[in-house]
Length: 120
Image 1: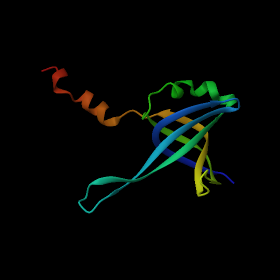
Image 2: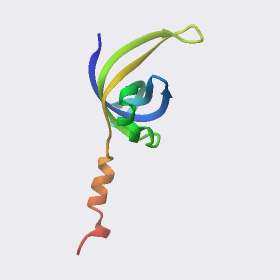
Image 3: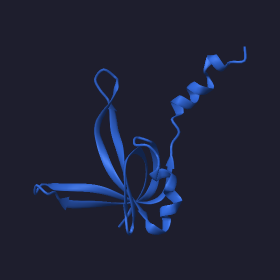
C-alpha cells in the first residue's frame, strides 16, 4: 500500500539507471530548543523515484545544484532492509508525481525591498 505525501527537502544526489532515475532529497526535522531557537534535530534522506517514461519531464531537476530546495508530491513506500554491517536500516521511497524547485522566499523579498533599487 502506498501513501500519498507532500514534502520539501534539499537535493542531495541524482542517480540515473536503465529503468529510471533516483533523486535523493534530504528533509530536515526541526524544533525549538529551550532558548526558543529553531534547531535541526534529525535529517531524513528520501529516494524520489522517477520512472523512465517521465525522465525527460524532470531534466531541469537533474541539472540543479546540490542543496536546491525541492517540493515533492508522490506515493511513498517504506523500505526496511539489512545494512552491510548487519544492522537494520530503513529508507523512504517516493514515486514522483510532481517535483518543483522552490524559490528562496527570503531572497526574493530581500531583492524586492532592496533600498539601493528604490526609485527615490
